[in-house]
Amino acid sequence: MAEDSGSRGYQAYYAFAIKAMGYLALLGLARFFYRLYQVRTTVRKAGREPGVFLMPHSFLFGHLIVITKLAIKLKTPPALHGQVMPLLLSREYPEIMDAGALYMDVWPMSPPLLAVFRPDMMAQFTQDQSQPKHDNMKQEMKPFTGAADLATLEGQEWKTARSIFNPGFSLKNLLSLVPAFVEEVLVFRERLGKVADNGETVKMETYTTDLTVDIICRAVLGARTEAQKKSVKFIDTMVKQVAMLYFNNDLQKMLNPLIPIRHWIYNRIFYNEMMPYIQETVRNYEKIEGPKTILALALKSYVTEVDVSARGNIPPAFLNGVVNHIKMFMFAGHDTTATTIAYAYYELARNSAALASLRAELDAVLGADCAEAPARIAADPALLNRLPYTLGVVKETLRLWPVVGTVRAGARGFSLLAPDTGVRYPTDGFVLFACTKASHVNPNVWPEPLAFRPERFTTRDEADPLLPPKNAFRPWELGPRNCIGQELASLEIRLVLALTVREFDIAPAYSEASASFQGEKGFQIQLKEMITAHPNEGMPVTVRRR
Image 1 (cartoon, rainbow, N blue to C red):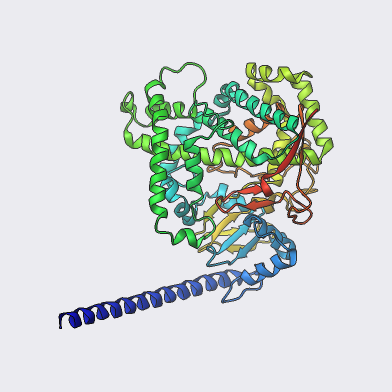
Image 2 (image 1 turned 135 degrees about the vertical axis):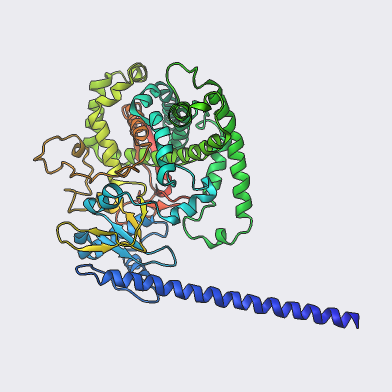
């Protein structure tokens, strides 16, 4: 009898569990279809605004059919970076390129987008009215930094943090750190020499990533981590954690119950690795003479501008927050710059006239003897500001190969206006995507948009058709939330080019079997573990001494 009673109890419990799961499944299904209806009607309502062009739209599949057909037609590689798709759609539908904005409904892959690639319209939500970052971005970064870093904070919290870190990222301060950066670039140059001597083919992005890790660590922490020679624990931990973020709607990650635990573990490891650097700086930031790290100046700014009473006793809560900011600086500061350096070599190898002009400028400013250049720059870092063509190479590389665009939140009652046509684009319910990739090669904005012409950024002649229009160049975005690290990145890339392009010929070395897209083997790909764009296959190259 007891066994029968226990069996019936188990069966009842099992039946209840099955029924509960069924109700939950029905609830989830109902929620899915409600959200589908909500998204599709929002997109169609926006598409009915006078003058707005909306691509063929399926109520069940949104624009996924249009995008899939185009991907098949163009034979897009599976790894092609998502920021390229608005550009491809604008070329397929000339009405979009002329309009400068595109509604894209790819839900449930992402919230509906309003991709914008006219500078004057991008300015409306980044400069004229700086819209907050979209919640999706904040949720993606929450396990990484608690969404408490300069890229995700909002309002007064963001303003306070930005003002604290601004002094460290000022050009004046960064120039004082150039001698330390020179030491790291010399290690990079030595590595390139070994590659040349061995006749190897290597992935340039791996080498530039190691270099930019070393430089960002010198700039932020004042620490020589030697990432170009060995593994760095806190960087390896950070990269592993980034790989767990949900940038690509990876269900395997989303449904993995161990992911939150692993995030907690990696956060603790990073924190424990960082705190000795931070505590050492806390003890000494007021005593430092000469060049000061970004962290040291941030502590000084906190004491002088936020809490004078904290002198000698920085609150733990502030120091904990500093860890989040440092993590974001480390991530953004090495990844994007490394990619840009790799693409600079790529473009210079394909444009011999630009390479010759660059080398001629370096000879004129730094002297013809390449061996003397490191000491000259270390003694007078301002020499890097006397290299306008070199800066033009950096900017033209970023124009053609921007790594990512900003995403902001639309709002009720806030519309984007196409100034020449008067067409209004409602933004409520949409992610506002400043599609830098499409904007930077928009033929309505840039003459010879696909040509590598660094002189676009050296001309001052208002009548020169190559002169970039106002607000057109925006790889670091414009407005109050522009990239705080742009001066560091620009300085860093100029320094790397100045100390390498006269010593080496660096050429892409893609194999015949390498994937190609529209005749380009170095197309931008989406790595599974990264949101930013990266060169296909990590940019394989050969290096030859000149």
